[in-house]
Amino acid sequence: MTVKPLYRRVLLKASGEALMGEQHFGIDVSVVDRIAADIAEARALGIEVGVVIGGGNIFRGVAVASKGGDRVTGDHMGMLATVINSLALRTSLNKIGVDAVVLSAIAMPELCESFSQRQATAYMNQGKVVIFAGGTGNPFFTTDSAAALRAAEIGADALFKGTQVDGVYSADPKKDPNATRFERISHGDVIKRGLSIMDTAAIALARENNIPIIVYSIHEKGGFGDILRGGGRCTVVTD
Ligand code: UDP
Image 1 (tube, protein in one colour):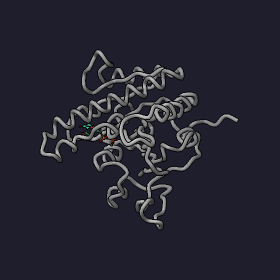
Image 2 (cartoon, rainbow, N blue to C red):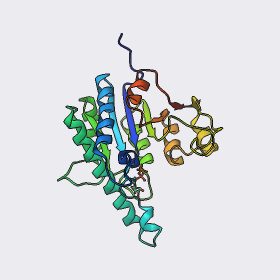
Image 3 (cartoon, protein in one colour):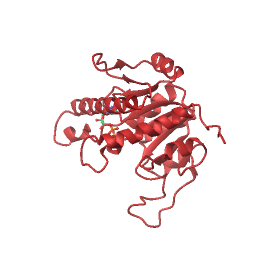
Image 4 (cartoon, protein in one colour):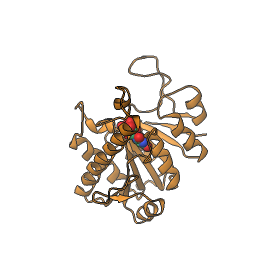
């Protein structure tokens, strides 16, 4: 039986750390291949997919700032890290026959195209997976904010936040055995309760643009597709 997917166009946010697998740094290609397979499954359902990847597996700007260095330079380094991860995902997608393009918020024409909302939308309409690299292109932001921003720009029906756990919990489930998982919670409550699923700026931007955030485990093979078909385990953040 074919199931009608819940969404037409989605934005997937994966942290850089998700790409490390069991490693302590860098990229585990087999993990990137698995995430690529999940995206291929979404494409097979006819869903248009945009992706934002973080850079925390390689570099975060605060690492420079915390040692007295220039935060802006540190953030530039962090944004470059997201480009490395984005290129890794593109090549994993291409390997399995999924047409994908990297659009960077910071121009580096020898490596990939530069981001423009118009070009991104045109590629998505053509069915290409669009990987948004370079975060927002500005220091002092995060790739969570970039994900909410790009989701709004491409008119995504939902922002999927792939995390280490299968939803939003009342407390950290790794530390508190009594933590309970929300099936549904509002953007406002996430902010009010200080539940750390994404930074506040990202959640506020999603709320302003009526974009639900679907929090799920990126480590669950096929989990993305299950949710897109209406099943799976996740928390839906919506007002
Ligand atoms: N970054 C930035 N501006 C952005 C997005 C990211 O300066 O719009 C930098 C920042 O230094 C950040 C790093 O890139 O620490 C990696 O991004 P992030 O920490 O969001 O990655 P994740 O935690 O998702 O792996």
